[in-house]
Amino acid sequence: MDKNQKMKISIVTVTKNCGDSIEKTIKSVINQTYPEIEYLIIDGGSTDNTKEIIEKYHSNIDFFISENDYGTYDAMNKGLKFATGELVHFLNGGDLFYNNNVIEEIIEIMNKSHQVDIIYGDCILYDQNENEFCSGYRSDIVQIISRGICHQTIFSKMKVFEKCGQFDINYRIFADLDWLLRSLICCHCSIEYIPKPIVYYLRGGLSDTQIGQYQSERINIILKYATFSQLIRFALSDPKEFGALMKIRLIR
Image (cartoon, rainbow, N blue to C red; front, side, top):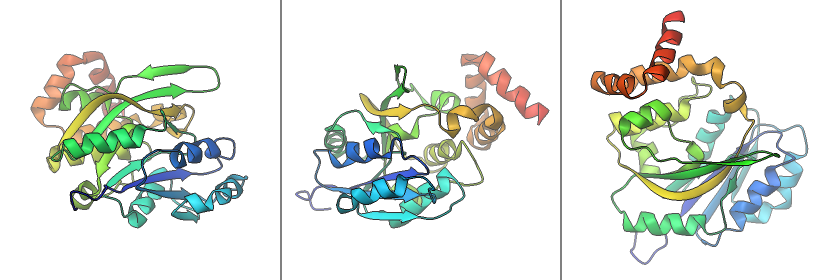
């Protein structure tokens, strides 16, 4: 990319039946101050008024498709298929950027940190009753293994997906953790934390309401990628959490 050329970022929104919240998500993208944004919306065949709301903003949307899919991560993979930016971000239906300058600030950081592959920040969990700040800071790979990172706070270079692969749709809830650990541990991609709120993350989605049913996914992913020493450090740093996960593993 020419040094005078602005980096293009592809923002992918996956949604289904989000008629009560999709407009806020769209506005938080199209009101960004950064000019080189490619906006893609992947709808899973909504049966409410989601598609009608999206159509209102067709001039601000670079790609839109509405069809049945195999879940959130299948839709995210579709977005990757059509995205053309050097940088990629996933902002789900109902989620909002923290302010209108987020993307501009992220691009400035990425331009200064030329070698970093993935950057991430903080999120604010919200619902109709309250907001709760949630720090994304992870001191090392062991904390990433044990705590994960909210994918709505992650910005990844497209080359990471080209090198490490897309989301494994065999995982219902934790395909983003699988992709992240694959990228960091197997592909040796670099990651950097920035102490900055990125998104308002809407509580109440599938990952919130059914996460307990899919903890076996999480432990299977951790055991798939973590080294023995990393597992030992996980066990020593958070024995209660590690023990709970291993109990699930033994039961199932």
